[in-house]
Amino acid sequence: MTRIAIGGFLHETNTFAPTKATYEAFVHGGGWPAMARGPDVLKVMRHINVGLAGFVEAADANGWELVPTISCGASPSAYVTEDAFERIVNVMVDGIRSAGPPLDAVYLDLHGAMVTEHFDDGEGEILARVRNVIGKDLPLVVSLDLHANVTPAMIEHADALIAYRTYPHVDMADTGRAAARHLLLLLQSKQKFAKAFRQLPFLIPISWQCTNDQPTKGIYQKLAALESEAVPTLSFAPGFPAADFRDCGPSVFAYGRTQADADAAADAITNIIVGHENDFDGRIYSPDDGVRHAMELAKTARKPIIIADTQDNPGAGGDSDTTGMLRALVRNKATKAAIGVIYDPEAARAVHAAGVGATVTLALGGKSGIPGDAPYEERFFVEKLSDGQFIAPGPYYGGRDMDMGPSAALRIGDVRVVVSSHKAQLADQSMYRYVGIEPTEQSILVNKSSVHFRADFEPIAERLLICAAPGAMPADTAALPWQRLRPGIRIKPNGAPFTPATKSASPSSSAIG
Image 1 (cartoon, helix red, strand yellow):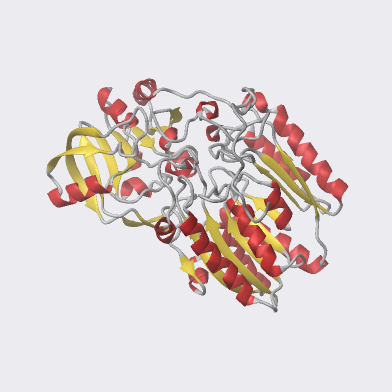
Image 2: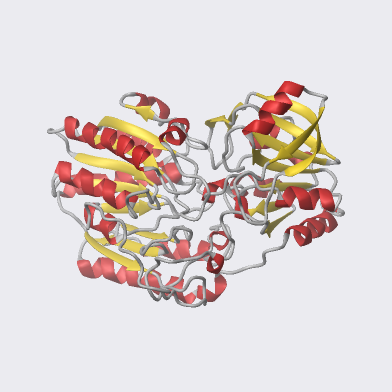
C-alpha cells in the first residue's frame, strides 16, 4: 500500500501587525480547526473546507495509507514566535522521520506567507527540513494559499506547489484534492516535472484580488485553459502584500513535462497578469463617506448594504478591535445596522457579569495600539449573551466548529455590535446569528473582512462597499513603511519602484540559504 506522510501548518504573516502568533494561538486555531496530532488529524480533517481535508478524502479514494503528523493554523497576525515555529515543525519533521522507510511521498498543507521571528521564509525552512529527512528523490507536494509569497527556496525543495484559485477561498479542500492528483502522477510516472517560477513586478492590494471580479476572475479562467497533459499544474499566487521581506509579492509557478512546456505556460500567464496592471484598483471610502453612502442606498434597498472594514481584517493580521467604523455608524445615526466582530475579552467578561438587559459603560475595542484608533467609551445595552460555540456552515468556513469564547450582542442607538473573546474573520452569516442578530434583517452590515465574507454574504447583499478606517492592513499597499522588499518591485500597481533608503541588514539566516 502507498504510504504518504501528511501535515499542515498555516499562518499568514503581516509583519506590520500588532500581535504575534504564539504557540497557544495555534493550539486554539482562531478560524482554523484546533491543533491536532497523530491519528487525531484524520478525525479533524474531514468534510471541511481545508486543503488537508481535501487531500485526506482523495487519499481514501486512492487507497493510500496516511501517516499523520500535526495539523494547525492560527489567525493572521505579526510574526510567528520562534517557540511556536520550532515546537510545531519539530513534531511535523519527527513524525515524517519516524514514518519511513517505507514511505512513498509527503504532502503538506501550508500557507506560503509565513514569516517567523527567526526566518523570513517560514515555508522554505519547513520544506528544507523535510527534504533533508526524506532525501532528494521522495515526492514532496504542497498546497498553498492564494496569498502565498512564494520564494525560490519553496520552489527548490518541493516537487509541486499548488495554490488556491478562489478568493474568497471556497476551493481550499479542492486544492488538497488537486495536490493528490498531481502526487498520483508523480507516483505513477516515477518522474519529476520541470519547474518554472516567475515573480511579478508589482504588489497587488488584497481588496482587488477577489476572484468574483475582474481582472482576477478572467485571469484564473485563462490559467485553467492553459493546463494540459504537458502542463498538469499551473498556479498564480497574487501574494500577501504586508510581509516586509525580499520575496513578498505575486508569483506564477508551472510544472511541465519539459522545461519548455513549463516556461511557455508560466510566461503566458505572467504576460496576461502584467497586462492587467491598470485594473488592480478600485474605489475605497472613508468611514463617514461609506456609512452615509450606505444609508442613502439602504433607503431603497431590499437587502443589506454590506461594508468591508478592510483595514482591520483579522484575516490579514488585524486584531479585529478597531472602532473607526463603529464610531462612523453611531455618529451618522445609522439605523438597523450591525458590526462584527469586535474582539475584546475584557468587555465580554464585563457584559457577561452584568447580564442580558443591563446597560454597561465600556471602553470597547481599540486596544491594539493602531494609530488613529482608540477604545470607544460609551454606554451599551446588553441584548444577548453566548458561550461562543457554534458551527459556521457557509462556503468559506465550510462547516467548521467555531469557538469565539464568551460573546455578546450589544446595542448603542440602533447599531448592534458583536463582541467576542477570540478573533476570527467575519466571513459567515452565523457570526451574527450566534449572538441573536439576523443579518438578512439589517439595513447595513459592517464586516471585519476584506474579501472572504463575500462567499456567504454576496447572496444576501444589495451592494458591497469597501471602507478604510484605521487598521493594521492598509488598503493601499504604498502606505506601508517598506524597508526590505526586493529593489525595483512597484509597491502598488503603477506605483513607485521600491528603493531601499539605506543598505538593509541581512535577512534572517536559515538552513535554506
